[in-house]
Length: 334
Ligand code: PHE
Image (cartoon, rainbow, N blue to C red; front, top):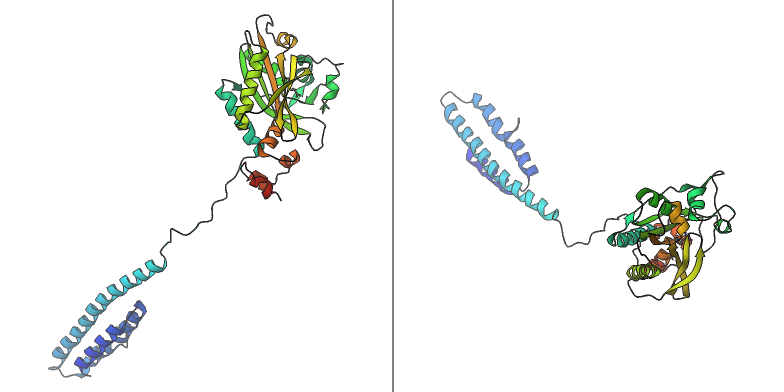
């Protein structure tokens, strides 16, 4: 075989190779066990002593030529292949992404946070009390003796003869005064229970209790505090009305109503802490006076989110929970 011709053929083949597979095939074709160059080396033995060195040299030369050329080509092909991968795998950062689904707080929790934040900024501290409460803290200490008709109004769930599920957050008033004495400024958010269920009542609901005790606290302070709070909560000046009412643990007592689309809506009870309550908790009513209020969280949430039925808040419908407070809210629930 003419080496010159083989070299030509080899160059031609190398020129045609366009990927690493082609190159691999060529390596086998020329340098493999039965490759064209390898066979030539084997045939060397058939040559005469004098011809052998020259022919060997020429074959080695060809071998080296092939190796050098294929190495250069291999680098080119590798680069070409990397470029091709980079091109097809490029990331289009302008493509829209599906947003991550984030968890959400329940509207009740959000309302509690919103209210607590306000009162904390006004210097109140947050208190806590047990949901399984004694009759004493839920009623007696709050100036509601055993035979008092107010007890019947509460539709109480009794646990046993002395213990019950608290019907309001007011027992925390007594617990806080006993703990911290006067002067005092606390709020207490929490669950309360009453055996009651219809479109506007659920057997478990949430209240926030507020209590302020200091020297010379009067009803004007109470009105101012609550009106300011309501303006903050609804983000506008609402029509607010303090309607005379009755609670055994406040005197005088009032119900706070706000003007809704459908008319006046009752949202909280309040009043000046009854002297009997202060005395029971060991505070001198001649030196100190105070006001207290109890606010229904579900009502506030319902108004804030413009919901029709409060029971939605208890159905664990994720569509409700994932809505932020806006008009889409109603649409999402259809
Ligand atoms: N505890 C009363 C209720 O549940 C509300 C209230 C609290 C009224 C504090 C006056 C003062 O209805």
